[in-house]
Image 1 (spheres, one colour):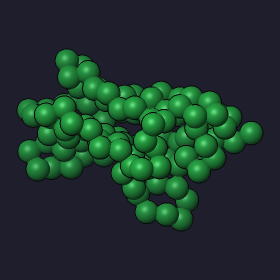
Image 2 (cartoon, helix red, strand yellow):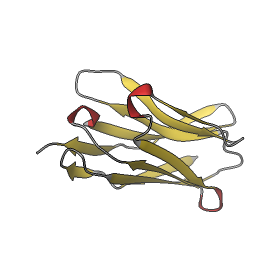
Image 3 (tube, one colour):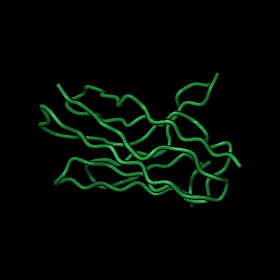
Image 4 (cartoon, helix red, strand yellow):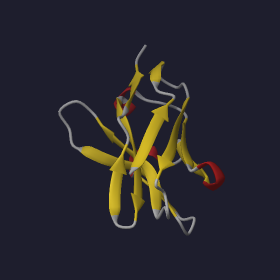
Amino acid sequence: QVQLVESGGGLVQPGGSLRLSCAASGSIFSINVMGWYRQAPGKERDLVAINTVGGSTNYADSVKGRFTISRDNAKNTVYLQMNSLKPEDTAVYYCYLRSRNIDYWGQGTQVTVSS
């Protein structure tokens, strides 16, 4: 079993920054993909950014140039640096990990962008 623990969410003003962290633990044999999704109230869960084992990254168009995903493979941790935050970035952010064709999700961390 794999556990994902997120941290770093909170309330921030428009234009501000936050950094999310997600640490994976448990029976991790190989990580193919780690990344972040988000779900706003009344909407579906959408991709924010993912990082593959080969090092490639993929971002949602709405966050390109503002968000940066990074990984520390030694710590099985993925980060999401979020800059120039907008009210429309308000959502619950979920950490995602894919290992051996199994998807794992964190419990979610709330990010609220409001003045």
